[in-house]
Every structure is written in C-alpha cells, then in structure tokens.
Image 1 (cartoon, one colour):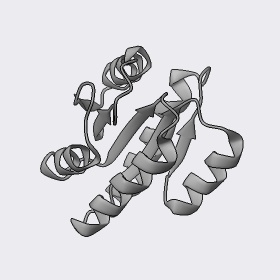
Image 2: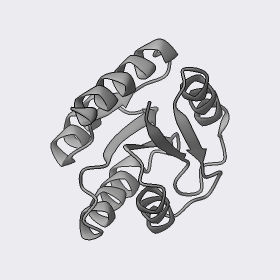
Image 3: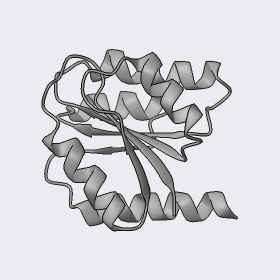
Length: 131
C-alpha cells in the first residue's frame, strides 16, 4: 500500500471532502497523512518529501487551484521530488482539468467521484511504483 499526503492549500476552510477521502484511503489500507487546513504550497511539498509520499492529494474548493496546484508541483520539482504524484479534488472546471493535467497533475476527482475510484487509482499507482 501507499503513503499519501492529503492537504488543504490556501484559505479554503471546507475540509469535509478531504477528510472523507483521507478516511476512505486509510480504510483501503493506505497510510494517510492529513495536514489540516490552511497549508501553504511550501508546507505541503515539504510534508510530502519528508514523509516519502507516493502521492499528494490537494483538496481545493476556493477556486485557487490554478495558482496553488502549480506551485506545489513546482516546489516538488525543486526538491527533486517530481516523482510524487499530485492529484486534485474539488470544484474544478473541465477546462482547468485539461490545464492541470498539462502541468503535471496525475488525476482530478470532482464532487461525486466514488471513493472506490480514487482508491483504485491509488492502488494502480502504488502497483506501478512497486515494480
């Protein structure tokens, strides 16, 4: 199973979705580090590196995903940790999903995505990285 960091970047104070995902991943056997609310991109990247995470999940409901997510990706790259997969959840317009993917986001999960789909994605990622 994988070690994954779940984080709430920026000033968005709605963390119910992040907690549901964290619990679902944990219940599926993954090791989850939930960083809590109001994390800076630097704090998130540092935690992902320090925890030797396979992936970092960012929950963004504030509309700041096109600013915060690329910054996390850039900071991971500066830490020679571009192998840490970044996935995003929240209210993300379809056009932004395309742009985020171009920037290096591995997956985007919008409201209503079954937790099983996210678990399956992380299981597949973990399997690919164990080979």
